[in-house]
Amino acid sequence: MARDQAVILKERLNSEKRILLLTRQLDAERARFHALSAELHVAAALSNSPEPHEAGKRRTPETNMIDSVSRIVHRCRVAKITAEQAEHIAMLQISTLAKEKYELAELPRVVRERVSSEVAQLWGPALRG
Image (cartoon, rainbow, N blue to C red; front, side, top):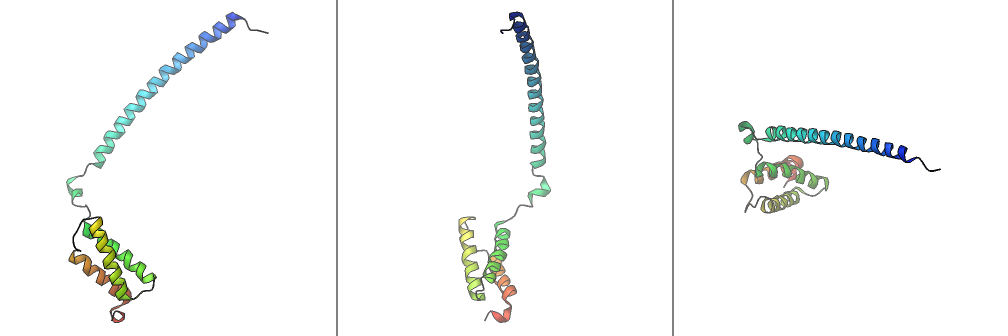
C-alpha cells in the first residue's frame, strides 16, 4: 500500500525543518570550535615563547656529545672489549657525530677528556695499561 501524499509532504516538511535546525546548531558549534582552537593556539604560543631565564638553558653540542660518550663507552664495556679499543671506538664515534651533526672539525678538549675519564672509570686505571 502506498502512503498518502499529504502525510509524505508533512514528513518531508518536518524533515526539512529538522535539517535547518541541525545545520544552525552545527554552524554554532563549528564557530565555538574555531574560537576555542584560536584561544588554545594563543595560549600555546604564549607558553612556548622562551622567557629570558630559559634562553640560557639550551644545550650545547659539547653537552650533547658528553652525554653520548657515556652511552658509547657503556656499550663497549658490555661488548667486553679492552679499554684501549673502547677509547678508540668512542673517539671515532664521537668524532663522526661532531662532524656530521654539529659540523665541528675536531672534538672539543672537554669531550676528549670525558672519553678518557669514562673509560678509566669503567675499566679502572690499573686495567688500562
